[in-house]
Length: 171
Image (cartoon, rainbow, N blue to C red):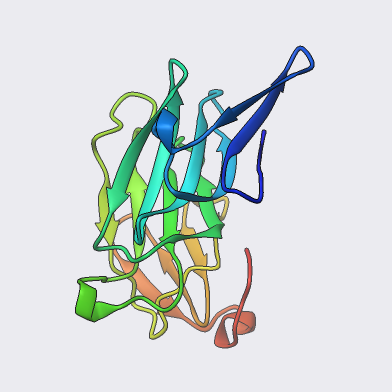
């Protein structure tokens, strides 16, 4: 699986190339394609200037669009946590005048409840999400211009470890 220069998602099956595009339900600007731990294929990015994801179901893509998140999902900010929940972070340069709030979208149970998601606003001063990770204690960590973490109840800004004081590209 890969995304080509035209924004199509491509796969090879038995030496035959299969190409998916918007005509198959794919989002207009995919930037990342990934497979979940349970074998489901997802893409993230944007659709017509709104943050969006899509998953493959029976040969067709099913879109989920998040206009309040921002114009796109950063390719670095896609994460599946220990429980199987999926997390998607907004791209930089959101436009509040268009209703963008930034933050993160979480699908708590994407395997069984794809219509249920939570939009979290983050305590960062710059809202771009450049990486998402999880420590052994279950805490979700977010990297960007500054860092923050989620303790399963609320978000906290942090400058620890010290790398979070500066622009951090990944976790």
